[in-house]
Length: 373
Image (cartoon, rainbow, N blue to C red):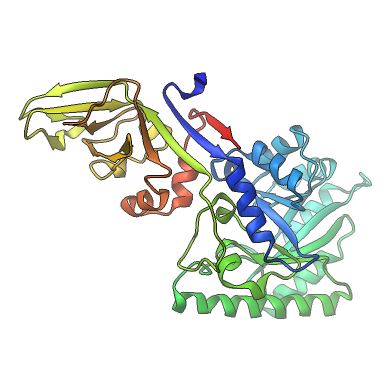
């Protein structure tokens, strides 16, 4: 037995990730690049192993959220272009350039600070301009004349190389009424890009705006590059699949530590939120909210033991939770599936009132990842 599988662990199928990549890749026109989003430790799946796989199968670009994530990949000998989607302090412009990392830029002031940070070094930094089309977060406002003028000025800065331009859709994974706004955003993006290119007298090499929701529902947005995130890991972010079959890549497991007998009237865990009604057998799992099992799932969770769904009872603790296994032949060492083949991550997300992105990212670093396929 793998030593990492004695308490609580996550299994990650690299074969499933490759399947998802190829299934989406098959929808792209020749010449359209594929960017794999590996921020947040590849949505909890492990940034380095996933990036190595993507590099091997022909992915052209990677995206992370911050400089630390980019440096981790470079130190692991990942040679693919890397785009930082988030903010890097301008004083690290030299580090970005030295590591051949591309930086997202959403304002003229930020672009100027990055360029100034490279003054006298002889280095140039690749950047992708971010256009704000309705997300309300960051970027040059695509439907504002002054903002577009600023974008044109950013393109002309001495030490920056404006390779690409992008935007982010906010409801491409919503219902039909919500998704109509994606068309609005897409048209704003196209018009904004055209205006910038006309004023600057040059074209961007890469235009990209296709997140996971758009990958499945808006093929017209593919343009020069797509950048699916959670879909790469087998999760469908909204009601549309686009006929693309995705396979979830992560399963989360724990092993029964103890099985304890309880009599009617006994209470279980903090706050005494569960009272035993009949003679019961209660199993203790060594997994809790410090491992990423959200406390809000207390008394809702239904893990699988031997393929049988059982009730989680009492409050989920930092390092443990309890299951009612009365009438089942459960013993110490038996494996419980928190989510995987029998329990979908989406089901847990619904119980928790959140999205599966959060549950995947929440699986903590102390939970070892065991790679298969």
